[in-house]
Image (cartoon, rainbow, N blue to C red; front, top):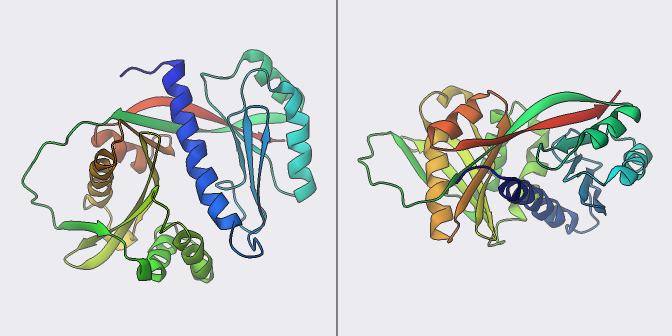
Amino acid sequence: MVITKKLAQALETSEIEVLKSRLTAIQAIEGNPMGVEIKQFGRATVFSVKNIPGPSFNTVKGLSDGDEKFIEPILHFYKQKDIPVRFELTPGHVSSELLTHLSNKGLYQHDFHTTLYSELYPLPESENLSKVTIRELKKDEFALYAEMYTKGFGMPSFLKDGVAQNNQVLYNDENWTFFLACIEDEPAGIGVLFSKNGIGTLASATTLPEFRNQGIQTALIKQRMQKALEQDCRLFVGQAKFGSVSQNNMERAGMRIGYTKAIWKMN
């Protein structure tokens, strides 16, 4: 399976579906305490979470050639909320005209981000000599999940309750599966799979600092590949910071680079 514009569109759509599913569930919490809003501007999906700062949930995905007239309304949308605007642009769906229009509005390219993919085939059976064991997370273990998530990503501990709540709401959604990795029965890492429309997506993952460099993330990727196969997925997708350990782990698991996204921000 080689990369084409059609395949690139499928990869980008899967990424949009992951974030839309997650934030729709968080939005449905009584009173919408996180202040989630999702809007469509042309082909662009605009995500805003007022009470979860940072770029992960406050971003624009899917902006394409021909959407130039929507850029000003999108900028106004984020300005009203006092949230920095962030566009994630894929090479298959933008033109020099669109990029010039963004530049004329005062935006600039800030970073790169890699999208990877692979076809899914039955994984070869091999003797498991690793100390890593992986199982699905239980419904009453989201406090543990949140503790590992915040420690793994270097986040303040006071965010644990919010992380637990914002992930537990996904537990009964058939599209989401949460995994816990252990070394000799000690919780060491977590990974999440989102599956929809025949595509399995690596949603998030981290390893506790003291357990890194022991093959935990590679094992979690392969476990999620197997789960996606069981759910009749034919394609597997992941995203990572360019050249990062996460990207390296995905490539070691057999995934290929689909494209590198351009991240644009306001001057």
